[in-house]
Image (cartoon, rainbow, N blue to C red; front, top):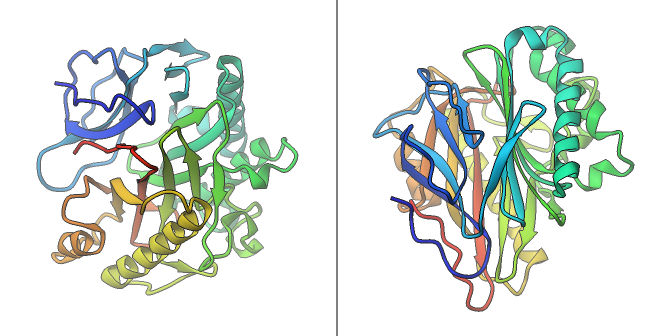
Length: 339
């Protein structure tokens, strides 16, 4: 059963729903399945990510629209759009990644072409799931090669570092790469964290090309705003904090998220406080802690919808990463995510 959507405000809504492979409702922009035994999907709005969920009933991440949805495939990219936003995805199998730098650049150029053809040229949010993300040494590490390829594609546009989307990059145990993304007709505002060096300004010690993403992206809608918080971890300046201590990394990550919310509130003073509409928590396999869930709930709220996933973080000394969608209401706005 589809949740009831508001009749005003933003044209889409995030929900966490019991995982199902039944036919999609007409109002679905995307349904993302997480797990290790996922069936192939025929509907272009279905997306599979090979990350196991931790604990409890399995749920899917579902993005629904209150406007009519059109969907299809173009150049092997699945997409759906509603006149205001477009959700899409691309899957590359491991043989396609023999030259990971080139394959990543080409994938991002294909995504950009799709967005421009369909009239949604403004990137808001990117999710990147790369098999064996930490394999390789030095600049041959797969994450560094991915970062170089992404930079090579995005840097073709002048001034690209002022228009970067929020993003996540997480490692999966299987091969290949899955990218899914949200774009709009008009741009959002890039938000950076005063506690951190912007990722696109990292020193060369982190690779030949700095990661090309913003710490968050703020998008204004008719009656409120959405803040897409990128994958956020225990990094201050550009250095990892609390190596080997999962709970201390969680606390530092929470401080970074709070700093981003403060920056967004300063950019949107007419809006109410930003509240978490949905979080994804990635924990490096083998590094869970019995107190982790309780502390996450205490820091972020008991009622916040959570997706708990086991995946490799882009730095080997990071044990945990958190991303999320946060909403702020303006006047009578009633944007809410349905758990």
